[in-house]
Length: 254
Ligand code: FPP
Picture (cartoon, rainbow, N blue to C red):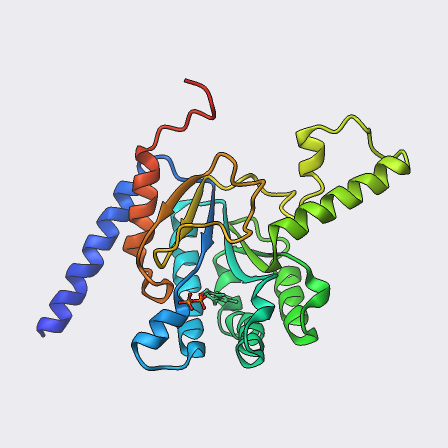
């Protein structure tokens, strides 16, 4: 009985804060560096894969709340170009997660009108991972709710170099102007259809960008937390957004 009472109390607190947060300015685009899965598992004497699995469930939870709050795009850093350096067993597990995530949650995402996208070098992904993602992208293409953008085999330096090479190629072919502007350059980035993130969240106490959206984060507000990603809750997201709402964004002006 007591347990039941506590459950409802927690739920009410969370609902109240969401309503409060909704009254303020909601970031259009939130980007998240989901860090701390390994440490979460280690603390529990579990294999690192257990931390990644728990982290996957948190992605679902955060997607739901962000969508309900009216966030337009959520980018999650699921695998970096540097993550290939991890032991093969861990890489193989991480490459299976998108499939498991989509097998489990795609019907719900479709119902909630979420549009799935991917940002990164797809060609180097295992066939099974690519297939699962492409299926999700295609089945959610016409949804016009929040964009859930997976940064998968993504690295910002590789993205910038690819953009420069493609731009050079088009300049040589006279298919674009050689007076390079910011807007033109941005159209060559992997995030070209998204606005820049308004809020960046990184968990686990680390305070660095780890080759994530270096161009796009130029004017983004950063929110760092010691919480390990698998422990990231609705309350953490609400706290990050409410802190964002207190920041004065001046973009270099006064
Ligand atoms: C960093 O934590 C996390 C990653 C490299 C993987 C992130 C992946 C997920 C959260 C799973 C979500 C995936 C999908 C497809 C929904 P870490 O392993 O570096 O943690 P540590 O620093 O504590 O070792």
